[in-house]
Length: 276
Picture 1 (cartoon, rainbow, N blue to C red):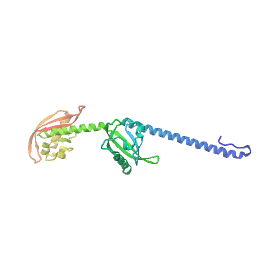
Picture 2 (cartoon, rainbow, N blue to C red; picture 1 turned 90 degrees about the vertical axis):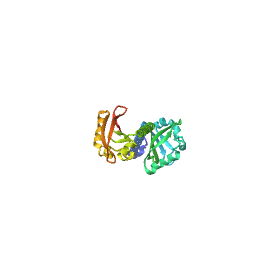
Picture 3 (cartoon, rainbow, N blue to C red; picture 1 turned 30 degrees about the vertical axis):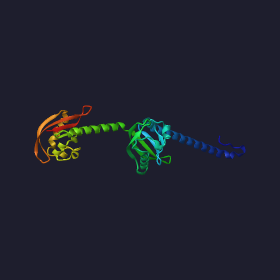
Picture 4 (cartoon, one colour; picture 1 turned 180 degrees about the horizontal axis):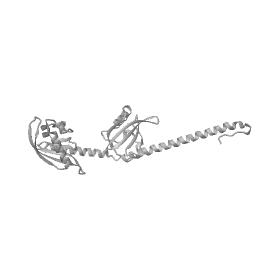
């Protein structure tokens, strides 16, 4: 009942009913749209909070934090209210990573497109950790925003540092072996070698790494590659005494020992060798 009609003016009954039906339809459509919007917002919030990466929503101009997901709170140790009320310039980061640099990168994401980089972040308790940040501009509600997806890469950094340390140790060992020595992957590419081997090949060490015998010592490559594959196939070392052509084309005799390399699961991942 949205209207009334006097008995003396029953001619208005039809239009009044039509108007009432239109109002009902409009109200129904509005309620359906509001329900759809609430459902969409709920779905967005569920997805926003379900990701394992931290997500920040920034003001594109100032870098101010406008929203964060649940993972952000766990990763940085703040409450949501603390982060939203935190002045952008006070947001903790490593000493080499300033607020000004963060704002510059946010604006760069708007002007130039998506940005991906590593960033040293700091938790509320002061602990520093490495993150990978992906910035992308987005228009949300008619406002220019920047979405920052932050991934904790502390474990990856530790692995990289351990690998780099292993490489330094391996290089130190190789460099102190007076005879030609090397390390290859399962495809026969040189992963490491020492200066005596480079001298034998007539190349620089850096020109050998990543290449195979067919690219560095083609005259004897086929035979040497067969020996490498035997080591990899059997998982056992071999010892051979054969001549080899050096960089000047001279044939020199070498006593060569080749052994398999194993990973932590006992799988052969390459070979290591030494010539005397």
